[in-house]
Image 1 (cartoon, rainbow, N blue to C red):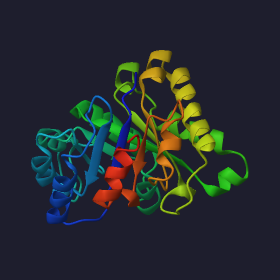
Image 2: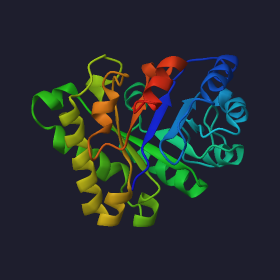
Image 3: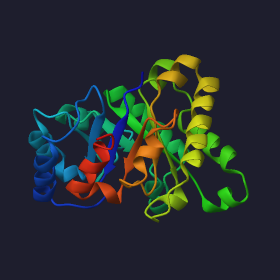
Image 4: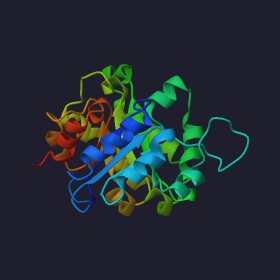
Length: 251
């Protein structure tokens, strides 16, 4: 069975001190890792301190981005090898904000995915759709195209190390979440695409998350769907009490 995951993406929020205090407040109230995997992605400057604060707890600390080179003259970028050496084993790649604000395309994201896997880091690959595509009923083609391009050239063994987050662009930070049936359809289509690209083993083993205006009020409905293995949470992950409500949604 696929272990479900609740992952928080803090984006460019929280100082180092605030990040550490957050981890300290939640670390003793998390469900066991065998039941639910929990992760928080913070800014690069805070990751080492967050790792230290999380010691002895099931909480995993993730990076929000990395580059596709391990070292070199790339001012401002973060090496996947350096992240792994620091103790970071998960990285978010292809988030819609990276695509829109920093003009990252599928070819670049594909190179980052391969570099992360080579460094021993599990990428959480985000794929999205636009409101325009949704309105014109072309959402299926859009999501599938993202997966085909982002995972192009991976072997089945490499693909097994990838987690995918389905995040409709129109739902991110809007307060308007997809209906659970819409979210399930997107995740189901992604799983079918993985089966066609690689094999049924990869399709069955890959964790597929939903992201976009997740709250304590809708998480249980989302997690009840057979092809939704977890959630990638933005704004609702910034408050420790709300984050604990999310990870303890079954209580």
